Amino acid sequence: MALPAVADTLPFAQPRPQLYSAGQPSAAQLQQAADAGVTTLIDLRQPDEDRGFDETAATERLGLRYVRIPVAGAAGLTDANARALRTALAQSSGPVLVHCASGNRAGALLALLNARDGASVEQALQLGRDAGMTSLEAPTRALLEQAAAR
Image (cartoon, rainbow, N blue to C red; front, top):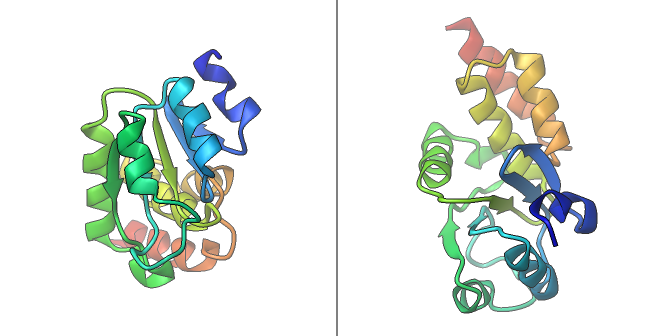
């Protein structure tokens, strides 16, 4: 399977080249992503959230780099978490899959990063929507507008 097909064959969004976002992948989807070239999995879920399988062990078995950045809803949309995500992305040597339960937190945090990279508020929000952001759009917009006003 060619890498560009990842977002076409799996329920993943591709907000940027080499970057995929999603809700909770199944063990089979994780295997498919690894087979297609994804090298790093960034998990934004809280440690106590049920993933349906041992994601850490599955990631290790597949030879993927596993990074956990616990994001607790709107309260987790922080500078520290955005910096942690930026660092994890920068340290990745290939395609990355960022996920939470539904894609909402992944999209919101990616919107914050997009704005830090120079995107306007609307451009950042569009990337966030493309990456799966839904109910966190209002608090994300507020954070982006607050940052833009500085």
